[in-house]
Length: 155
Image 1 (cartoon, one colour):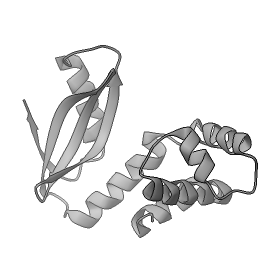
Image 2 (image 1 turned 180 degrees about the horizontal axis):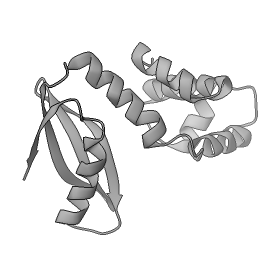
Image 3 (image 1 turned 135 degrees about the vertical axis):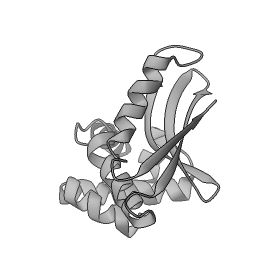
């Protein structure tokens, strides 16, 4: 299921049919516990052919409005407002990780001994990030955190 906080944001950002597809995709992913397009297309409860479901998913995931700024940032802002008061101290962690050939630079909020991502970028190279890349991801993250005191942690 999608949290109620996120449901309101998704309903405001997406057309009704697209919102319904998001809920089907999320529910299917939670059941399948796999993120493979073909497996997801096979499991989606839509009365169309498999290939049509696969194409529908590909088109949906490529929508311009389905991006980090228009979908994820409003969710993060709402979550921050729910969890923190204005001028609270928020701890951010900046870290780079690799998943095989995928190199990700991520900024996360540390809360209750856990972290949750607020912004990330894929790096077009192997290995460590540099100061300019780190500054760029932090700058985009700080836009969400203007009401708070921020402490940045990194290695």
